[in-house]
Length: 411
Image (tube, rainbow, N blue to C red; front, top):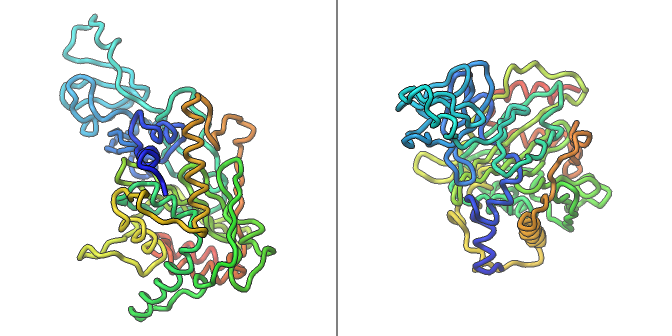
């Protein structure tokens, strides 16, 4: 159980808050690359800050504060040209670095243009995502995680905006025991009532779980009923990439679940998926990585819980906008949650001391491609689990599901 002070420290993400300062040391997705075409702009929100992601006419991305420094009109409504974004109110123009390029109504020799700047943050694109860095300089390297840079693969990006604090979703990632109940028994009952096939791989009882800290976060391990420590689930495991990513999947299917704090009570959830042919053959060429919505609400406002990710969303959202952890009662099975919270508090202290937190990458040689551990034979039954997860997970909503299934079926 946390104290009220610890609860506030872990959940508040705005500028100047302890957690906000920690999270600002990392690159975070602010949009999918396909969402903004050259010459367009859209409003985004990240870590409690209202921003505008734009792409100039040549296609270069930029990220600036939403409010024009002149009269505070929204730049999201502005015009984008070859150099930057222009406020719709009086035509002041800013480039991606926040430099004021033009103040049309001011005298040509006015010092105002040289003095005024827009809030601006670095933005880089990798693997179909646009990542932003909101922290102090010098910015660390954008980690080139394997799934973001592999060639010859298929990719897609699922998305949902969830009305709860980011930490509730991340804590679900270090809670292995929910799998057999939420995704096994509960999902099985829901699907049987709907006349659908129940899951066959998620009901196995957990005999042992383990968590090891490594350079990028936490390696999660498990032994399920009928298995042993020789299985990939324990011998390899899969990582929580600190502070807000989880790597999951099996064999030819690899996925990052990225939980981006929009503000204290809302989270942008990205399912970034990468699919490889079991034979090693190259996947069909993609001109861009598609983005699609992952539905989680019924028309009547109820929860869609007949697929795995819908159950996770229900469990996290029904805790409330910010769950009161001072009222919880943790048990020995919650050891992963305890470890993760302790790590967050430790890394907050490192940032307060002026140090880099866990997982920051500054060595270009280390960043050519960062290979992550992940099981191949999930629960001891790789191909069968892979097929089932395509039908029971968010990938069932992908616009390229047929291409994915054809690729994974290669033998």
